[in-house]
Image (tube, rainbow, N blue to C red; front, side):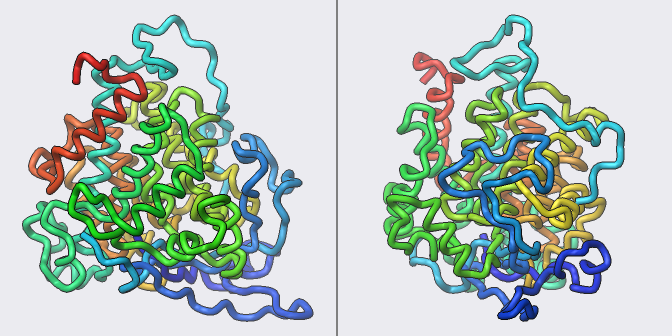
Length: 476
């Protein structure tokens, strides 16, 4: 939930790794390299942005599923190749919200490109509409609910340290980070939310969820655009909102584009182009975890749906890569193909998800950078507190996969991520969704499920489960 600038690696470091122009520069007239201006902060929370990407975004009107797995770096006639530049931004702008409530994997496993078409399984015992899983029905529902409620917890608790640095966070909450909503300080920023309320990150996930319910289980960018526009103006009126709060620069600029309601992909693409291909904010990855649930047994459809919603506001390929990695990781866990509690199987799951994400990128340096974030061994390697880069989409992805890869329990790991500060609600949201799928709803801390609007959220989740065939009408 932040849209600020991510400087990324230094030009010298990048130049030593690639023949492409160093990140953080753009070609000026006559081929001269000009400095990239710092990204503007953009949300009620600054959405930091890394340096510009000269990579062509996935075109709004072609190849809805994105490049197929196995596409080479140069094999993309639909994308215009220009010098790679790192960049990005998170989706938040300071004080601008409407008032309202990599290196290729080295292991033998990781060198195997995952296939999106699964072999025909034996007759399943649990068939719910088009969703099939090796998990029992109860376990499947537990994990699906874990995604939604886990994200809401990570978002609501992450608000505690949002836009702080680690020193400030430790001063208020100790080095281990906050453990309950009641500990959240009431400064100017945080006092706009009541205790136990989530922020715009989960608001937008719920807009996607509502769109899926209203459309009977399908996804459409224009339908989502209309819901986003209405939310920006009114928020969730039934919850007493007066408008969407915490909207970042990328989202705000795209929502204000004249063609947003009729062609949101084109609107987002033009906003990205106008920025110098600088914007790679976390405003898409913070909301799209739910798309790993819909049609989870068909990975191509998961990626198509993810693309449809990501590109509604975020055109940079790094945003799409981040979203796809998260949604495919969730889909694979729901399929029951890998046991995320077994180290070797978890490693293969992460490798598959990483590869699916990397296939949305063209430039090798960005693939390496993405892998570096997804496979970070220590949270400090992600530098989440950096005020200039905190909203970069790769950072939120890194925080999320760190939780998925290392956590043996939900809350201790979430607290570690939140203690790193920065864009902590978005990092917490992504981490909470992935860990929520890993541990299930039954593995979430009960004390943190006492949301301000818990009854309303329960109704939204029940409607969603019914729509995707995981809750019989007679159960309601």
